Image (cartoon, rainbow, N blue to C red; front, side, top):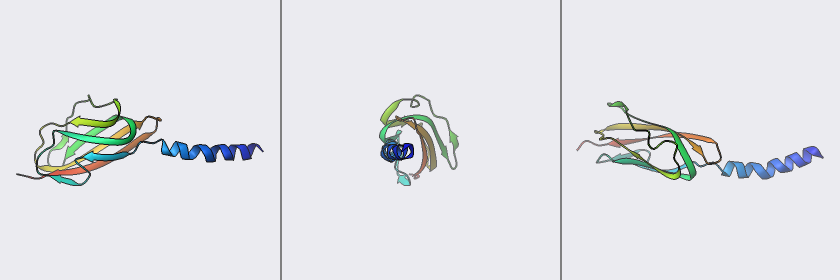
Length: 116
């Protein structure tokens, strides 16, 4: 009987827990996008509220790029990370966030700025 109750509880709660995560829905620039001009900011939109806990940017030629920390630990569905002046290069972003339900989510994206 106890096993039956536990099984019913898990079957009802697991779909709810899986749906509570807040994956990244979109970014601008988008993953793999090539842009003609350097963006002033990188925008991210999550399915639900999330806090960015880590965000790094590196260029193939430029190496690691220093960013401020004012975009970290703010709970929001959308985030805008101010970028310094970026030269033409291939860029990699790595991020880690904590969704409102406490689960850690992480990912990466890349974009290219073409030379003028």
